[in-house]
Length: 265
Image (cartoon, rainbow, N blue to C red; front, side):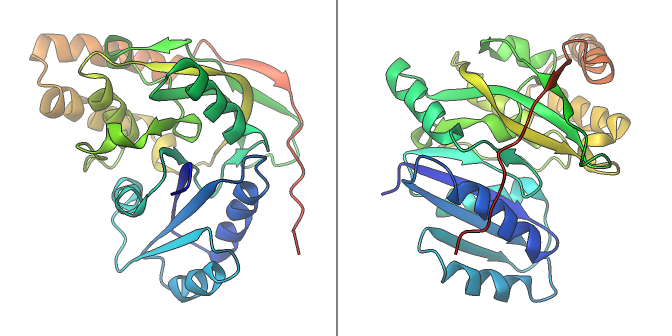
């Protein structure tokens, strides 16, 4: 059984899968499996993924016949996962080489089951820009804090697999990761932040996460359908959430340099 199951959903070109796996392959912690879920990309991507899995026994290919979104793809990955911990890495995002080792060490030494971290934010339209916005969430994130907005970046999250036995990503097109964090913390558990800044989220224009107005509509649905909040409380939480999403006052600029990715033979 691997120590960590890394889950990557993909909808698009196969080349992004190769780059993403290289990031996982360069981790200083090597006891992992990389579950790559092709979410109905077509264009022979599934066949290419199966062939690619033959180059590294730690790759677990999962092929979906139709596109159902990142949440459903991650659920397929969860069903295939055998690791003690679960981590998430999307094809456009980046981890520094020490990410898994640092986070696992923190979780084991502190007895943590739900873990998140700080992360950089890069704009895809400016790939050569050396200054990235850095998001520094609170050290501890509770259910009450999550109701006011999601400060947790999915690419930083690591979860003890046993905590995901009875929950999964819900069928919301936007905010489905935040929805899962709410479910995981509803019983009083909380996320603890591991030290360092070793994750980079790539924001692309036109993506679901960049469409803030439509996202707030799904946020309302989560408040009312999943969290069963009253209309007055849902309105209050939505206002606070909108303030968080639109303003993001905690962004700070830092000069950072990403680990160079070199293709291993």
